[in-house]
Length: 410
Image (cartoon, rainbow, N blue to C red; front, side, top):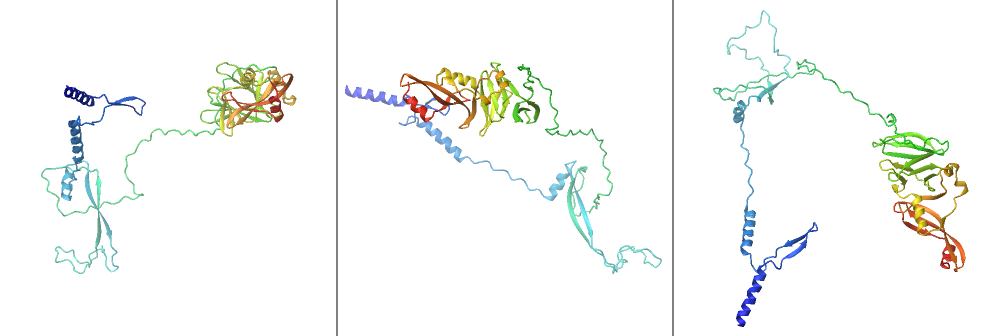
């Protein structure tokens, strides 16, 4: 009984090892879960392995096909093959270079009455006449002269008859077919950036307060608007997609409308040669050059780290700080920094737009109200540095006295 039980257990274990129960799962380079068959541990698939080995051996013993060498072509074969080609035939050209003739010998003497008669046989020719030597050079050239092929033509012999072909000089007239000249394309000179005509503008109508001039002239076919400072004015320049810059003029302010809220963002000049970016009752003062991406109406600040986009305006940053009780109110604006035009636009508070760790940030001076020892109200000045990209508070600065007072305040 025990033997039968042992045999059954052994049979079951053997069948389990033969099956795919012990297969593995893996994750491939694409992040997929892949089923992998088990390796042959107990010699289950010997025939498959043999087939694989046989295929590998065949691949190893396979010999790459050798390239058939090109047959050698003799001169006679080339001459025979040339008769089968009606359009291309070799022509033998011999260039003759005469050697200098001694001064005593004359090649072509003038006939006189006492001249020796022309010999009629080889034996009658004078033996003392020098024969000029000729240095010949054989040059093979291929021309497109058709050669008629005849089946009864005799094979070429070794005797080569020289053909004297004069080389045409540059001054000799050559009869070429006259070609009728076609219409010549007219070359239009590439204009310089200063000579490019200014395209017609599409003026964005913005109502200005009191008697101020037009705020902005935006071109629909332009890619960027550049803002520069000159003599207390904003110089508006338009730049197209090819990099050409056109100056549009000088003015006091420039308005950019938000694509989503359509709320105007005003960029204006101050008397102290500073630029203010304003929206609502809050503005940001900066000395960095500004530009506007016209594809999305985004204001860009040119810093030492490159062009940076201003995503959050100072109004939204200040509202967020006041709502989170980071500050209780802003410091009052300096009397010398105010202007009548800024007051007419409704700007009451101005912060600084600076650079911190390569990103544009707002430097906001605020006040926090505390109760010293729980019963005495005090005001602690605080400088908040907030990112114009994310709107988060990057740094909070306080004086030493402010830190001591805040430690004893509630």
